Length: 493
Image 1 (cartoon, rainbow, N blue to C red):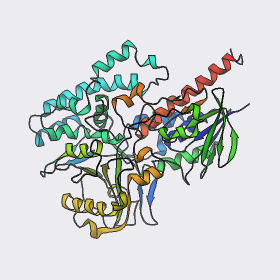
Image 2 (image 1 turned 135 degrees about the vertical axis):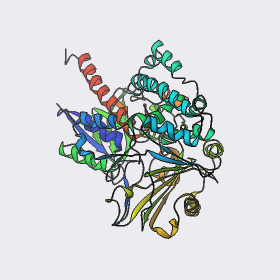
Image 3 (image 1 turned 90 degrees about the vertical axis):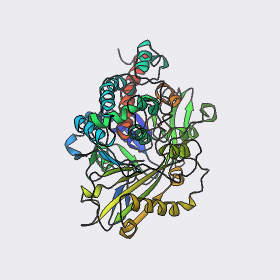
């Protein structure tokens, strides 16, 4: 008898879960994706001439990503990763700029050049974070907390104190750097997962450390080309992959899910994995099983995708332009929940190292502005705001940008919400203290014996490698869960 597994949602979490589970030929897996393509946040946009990642761009924690894929049977040779050196540039409103390097000595010299006296603090930061990263990864990122007491063990609580988890990231950076601009430079990485630097627990400061420890990489062809590799491998293994397949509800009897309804038809399954944005998965359950919880969404993004008649000369494909008042931008996004007037801006210009994305002599440019999530903002004016951002970029580092645009697309949180992201947040639920670790939804979130979950809103959290780590924990747990169930029934010894 084959174990029938239904996966609701074909994002990277669902695909990697299927990859790991499908190593066992006794598992019969079906993936239901409501849109017309797989990948979720990880996909391309463009036209016949230009192609660019629509969502994630920076490849972090490459060793974690590659090791999980290799465990699933995909050789790292199939992923042409290019290391970014320098990692990126941070450009301040006063005209100064800082290059971030993976090399520690080179980075210290660069910090001393721009922020005299802060090189020593950087050395302390690296020394402290090296220890914290190992402990944090072992005890939190690679552990599930289905059993809550696992989190509140004396060992974990001692580690939390040593990690200074009672502080937020910005507070922690003040202990290392005197210049506020440098504090922002080492705190802004919480924006990678949609979190406020002054609200995200200090554990997330490990992201900025990991840039030095593991580097920042670019996947040639675009990050979303990973989805093509996963899809091809899964189809070769016989995994059923259905698009335009809208799952409407789960059937729950005696705390057990016996199947789901898709496009009006019922399908029986032994286990069901939910890979949609988790807070919205409540809608699939009968009323008595719904959690009816409210969550704080991550920030949204105003995204501008451009096909250009040229490529710009710059030191890295990644650039961060910090506005006049970074703190005000963050307050506008997370507290006042209004569109920022003087925003900080991230740009991604991969065509300067990858000629597969545009015709010869042309390029692509991706621009991201953190904005509030939620339905309260009227984004009918998104084109006008995009033009404002383009003018800002022309002033800051992309001269004559408007005249160089051949193709453009603008995306707001409104479109993200329509695509199924909770409140239009681009990164799952926000990484606040009470939405992290044990407080974040776990891989078995409803207490239903055979319903599981994976994705950016599920522990351990957002970011492609971290979601993949969640998929690995889920596949391991499901294999153990099935074994325990069979053991209880007397089917195994």
